[in-house]
Length: 523
Ligand SMILES: Cc1cc2nc3c(=O)[nH]c(=O)nc-3n(C[C@H](O)[C@H](O)[C@H](O)COP(=O)(O)OP(=O)(O)OC[C@H]3O[C@@H](n4cnc5c(N)ncnc54)[C@H](O)[C@@H]3O)c2cc1C
Image 1 (tube, rainbow, N blue to C red):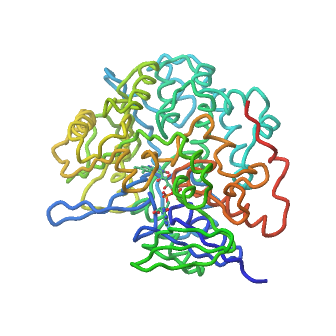
Image 2: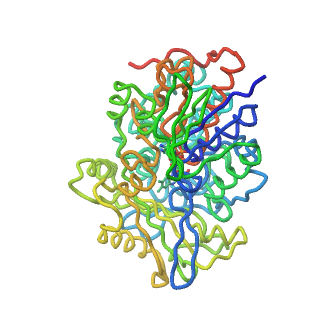
Image 3: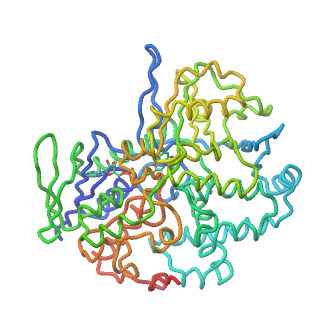
């Protein structure tokens, strides 16, 4: 049998995962990447202080939403080491003397939440119900079957489907929790991709979605060296499998009828033939290259706007936290610092940046203690490094022009650190930077906002999603699997995996539809 020729565009995590599965399934894959190195938003950059340099993650930092089988089947598990902080996380609300600890033991956590936040809701029911929804999602990932409301109804029942999939985040939180602080802690996940109202339909679904990684059982951790080693290693594995990788090569034209793409590479225009084209870029780029005028116009109307900032800091000595414990790993857990204490203020701060009349409206800081985790992995680097992922920024300015925002974030963080004077370097990235550096539409870390009409079964660009979810429009030879497709962004590769499986099922002549795939329903 002649090997199908597949061109994959974009060597981010999704393009790399799709290329890996397709090449191993017997296709001949040509991966075309605009940048000079692979990785997309999962890459490193260099911080230099005097004559000392150190790598740090420019985009993504933490790993957690990947599926364990993707990690193993691609070959990544054989060459990478990871660390998941086990120490309870620390949560700070304004005015707190001591942080709240998020224990992994349910009984300890329930007691802590009741004592510190006055939580009197049914936390155990929340955990049990979420576990059922997560299992439903993970089963779909493994089988590469995108979801429908009907499938959720039949597996989870109508009540859980209404609450956890179709419902609003506010409805979900009010159902299980009584304390404002528990709700704000949950809301952090809902608004991660962008300014989403907690009242939006389908906003509840973001919670189980973001907990549906299986690589670390729903938890988040770090890769030894840095997360970019995932994309670097995957590129190496793919090359060894025979994938042709063209870097510094920007796709400029697609002829879907002839089955060929044109790309600009090192001042030369080149062509590559394909039987199938897989677009693993952001949706706007993909649409402008292969879509009709109507499809482009429809896609441009989507909600893209992101509101996340990232401040990376280097310390010449290990960071010493004011709040910790006697445990030797108490410098590793994630730390969350909120600027608001009630859910209405949280909602207002989230949505305030939509009009761009304010550059920064403080919501929360998430602190990833990457340097301390590297030490647990046996790596001693020149600097200790922290990543601060924070909310809420407008799209207006780049980090270099927002000195006051940078100062404000540093000040909030440094309240909790004993040795802030050891900070010798930092760099602020804003949504505008993410748009300029990574081509993320609206500077959104998930390529599109996870909200009603853009989550769950409608996270696709197909005209026949019930039978060909990852196809683009009506085109039979073009597929799409960037972070804008189901399930979502993050360093997961799940869209790349699911798309490649759907394509292979089509090649094998199998019926793509199944009991889990029927016509999507939206009221
Ligand atoms: C600041 C920041 C922090 C984040 N933090 C985390 C985190 O901690 N954990 C996590 O899991 N996720 C995180 N994310 C999200 C995660 O990085 C992304 O969702 C994910 O890496 C996107 O992967 P992708 O393959 O879908 O797309 P991308 O990584 O965007 O890859 C698309 C590729 O297509 C290429 N391309 C575009 N146009 C063309 C063209 N015309 N021709 C050829 N190539 C083209 C691009 O150069 C790019 O390499 C973060 C993102 C950012 C920006």
